[in-house]
Length: 167
Image (cartoon, rainbow, N blue to C red; front, side, top):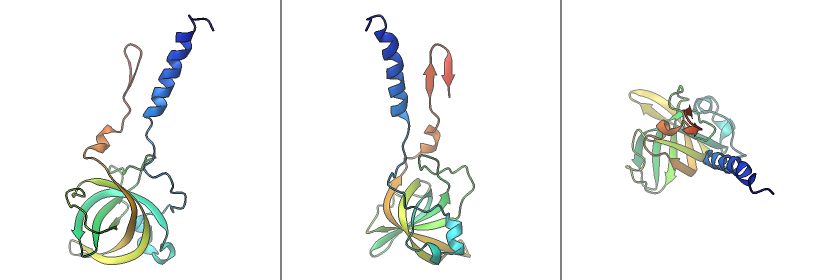
């Protein structure tokens, strides 16, 4: 190969590799068995989905450490292609995330967002303020708690050449 042509080929190859490496990937990859159903759907027909796997996400409302488990109340939001909650979208109801053992409340603080891969374990009546509410129960298989401010880092920041920008 001509030495003068090597940089012409190498530069686009390096840029392509950098762009591909920068793409985000879903948090949970092996979720082929997960059903596409919302928390609101489960309230209507929980028996049909008992034992089904789901990948849900949302914003933490409250946490309660019980004797052998921890329950985290979550307002559900749709997930983007990277399985991150989209809090700017309308909520899809609420669900109760059940974790084994003790969980540090500051790690699951109200206002933080999470994504869970879990199994539907029926429903339970609770309360949202003074109103009775039927919570779908999700037993966690794996959980990703997103860092504070993750929703502000979603746009790619790429600069091309001199003066051309994509924001």
